[in-house]
Image (cartoon, rainbow, N blue to C red; front, side):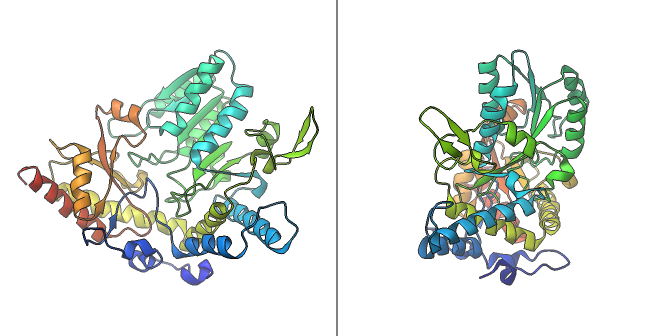
Length: 424
């Protein structure tokens, strides 16, 4: 069924109850017979029926490798795979769909840049500027790179409420870094960073800019041309698409100058015993058989979100935050909440701690009542060190999240306190 038949763009707020009908898993019960309250979308989103159907249709009716077979289903597979690339390009307003490289996830996309661009351009003493709130995927690849190339890492600090200190960023730019890499939306705090302003500042200092958009593309409008960045990385599984799908967008001139990331089939034009010629972009960076069904699913997910309207998606999650934060503070004033309280600069993520209860125990008790949240450091150990926290519990929203989900979380925290003998 076409996405347009499932979701018709309309004015006004999203109706999450209607949207939930597109997500089969949300009508299931847990093993304890409770309705599933899924509040871990920042980890991985649920999939709408349109995406599930697209993957199933590929596997059952035209499963064939891409760019190879000249028979019917091979050509159909190639057409669907490349159509998905065009959908993803439209989703982020890329000027040319050939600038979209399919990867397994944002982690692979960032590693691609670190290995291909980084090892050619970072030299001894060169600086790369990151932030204290980065996911490990946008930290560890740069650590490896500067260790290998004898470069330096510098970090933009955050305030206690999780906002980047741009006055320090301005000072760090005087080091003339080669690259500035930062998250668009923090996966732990929900902070929406001023990516347009930061990109402009970095470019004025002569640096290239990589944006980790894994937590942005499912939740806020993304326009890589308006941002002005040089690289933009994101995952499919956080934007309603299958696991194993993702993309890197980069400016054509950079991609054409970069050497291949992986070598083998597909990424070559000619191969001889002692030399090879590389394929054109994007295929130069897509060695071997790709995750065809997964990327087709990602294209459908992009179309689904565009049909909803990303402005409306962001407004929906902001409204949920405006409901959830005061509700939690009123019902549980002793519970610690982290991240900016200004919901105009915050995505749908709420990290929290219950005094005297480890986050893992919090998540375990919440699971008993059907509420799924994440517990741990959320692949942001340095951020937790900065906040002097061993871990946090984290609730996160998506297009299918409702006020009822928030109410279930509030009631679930009451149950956690009852189990651990904490006075309300």
